[in-house]
Length: 623
Image (tube, rainbow, N blue to C red; front, side, top):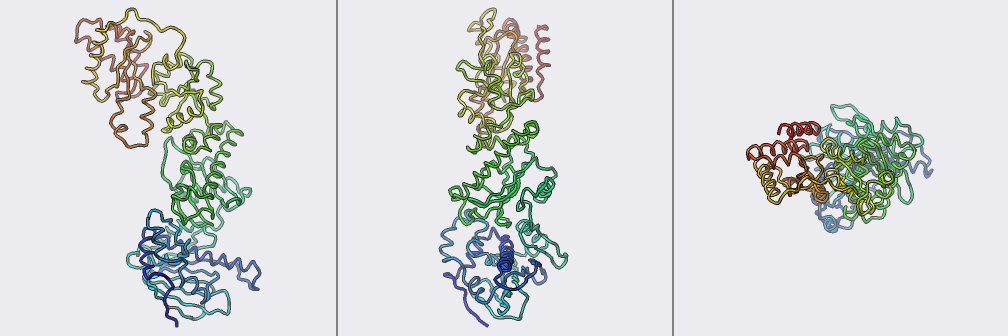
């Protein structure tokens, strides 16, 4: 029996492993099962190479067992095994230069990749994160080699000896420490196996004292297959295998498969996306050779792809660097560009080959495309060709198509084509009605990303300008040649000041929640409303740019973005000013203002424009 000491530059290697990787304790199981998988795949490679004249059969398997009474976990494989010399080389000599270098490089805990252990030859040593003692029993595929016993209790000291003959392969026995006893629970280990080992390429079975043996994994997942051999049913079945809690089918999918200049396979699914951004980054899973790595692909793929679901498998994504270095890695850059191009190519192809079907799906993918356009430059250029703009009549146009349709009659004085749009058909009904009366086309742009998208579109297309329908009177949004209607008599300075004073008094006493930034008296048409509530385009965009920012502006000062326009040419304003009795005058003003606020949805309720118009007529007749 040999008693010796592991070759390592510092005696504190085990405290280092436990200290720096404590938060990732659960990956010990992935690392050990990955090692067992490698052992079997290596043996298969040797068998195929013809180096030895022996048939190992096809009954390759990894067995995982829990013995709760003995507080042990067993990971058993029938792979290549190890000789005594190989145990010396791969177990007794840790494969990195020193503990101090390890600490220096990864002193920032946040920079640690969840798979760092395996990439520094430390996969086996992850077992000491949860174990007070670890035993290795191994038998090499080489018949003349003896079986080897190795044991260590979490210090540089170990014991190694030859032992009675065993079957080919390796068994790792973990004696779980008290702090990690959760890993002796059947359901906990089952959860980890489903998370990390669900698609490993070697059959994995799992059992415990009270539970029968079950097979954990699908050794031949859909993303590894030739797309020509897969049918729609196969893709849907795999989607629900990935996401068993998802009841709805995906809209469509993209199969990724490239082996030069980098290696990558995968399937990306497009789910039905609501008109909101879900920033959960747990939808696309990253694998390396069918071994689960992470569900956080930040800085590996563009942000907007986090709205999709599916699998990406690539051995060319470096996992032993900090995330800050990922963006500068050539392979990562190329992978990101490739995936972005494949997504845009798929959408473009759908648009060109079956536009009607594409339009049916558009409302479910629109926000995804918007997010991509504002966050990824190369996607913006491609998506511009198939991004669809819907009018209030539910007719779809591309940017160029819509420009062509409105270029002759929706231009401002500077010659820019004006894209009028609404963010809420119901709330902005009265403004839409005014636009329709002038035969203008109005788009629906109602996502939280609208302001960011139109800013970018205006930057790249200097001949267009987006204007929301409620940002001013319709005649000012797109000035017409006809002369503005004149009032019978202009208000005097005193009348204007009295009118403003009355309105301010009412707003202060009755509607102090909405303090308008300005009150403007304008000589509009007699047919226009007596009062108009607007949010100037510039101010509203400032407000909406803060959509994702938790700020006082967003929370408390929304009323400062409103402006109140008073139509001094409206008959109700004339009646207010001509009424000699102060009480009656104030009542008439308040009633008219109440109706205006109601129609603009400032006083809780739905759009009641038609109702308000009727009430205003009644008010005029009554007074």
